[in-house]
Length: 184
Image (tube, rainbow, N blue to C red; front, side, top):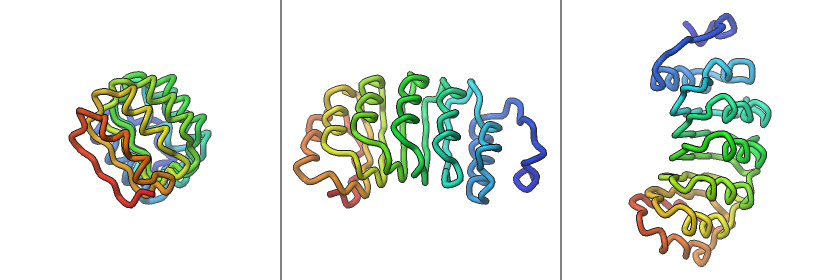
């Protein structure tokens, strides 16, 4: 199969986003999504990137995503514990059309980097954050102030958010989906 012989693949050429993402998911779950194979899935025409397991990808590998995929509209990264503020700043700079950002396990990012991202993406429609324990009310304030059209917000395992810190959510008038899984 392709996954078992990925080290022999030089390029996939042009394949639909959904096929590319499915192959990428399979590689990730088999531990084959590593810095040397990640570039096979990145190009400047990609609109959706869904990496279900980034445990083998360090900050340098993750940093090439926004540079190679400036047309992304949806970016979902799971098990991305090595993702840091620098990578978020690159996403802010290189992916101006992003409408959805989902980060699971991005425990190294802080409010300042996410606030810069939020201010630069007023058309963000959905934000999902799991295990981003360095984020506080400041992130929610930025969302309420700078992203009037936000429709979906998922916050889970966010230990720095108290009940009082969730108050800015009340100002998110267009919010249609809200999921809070033990925060605070």
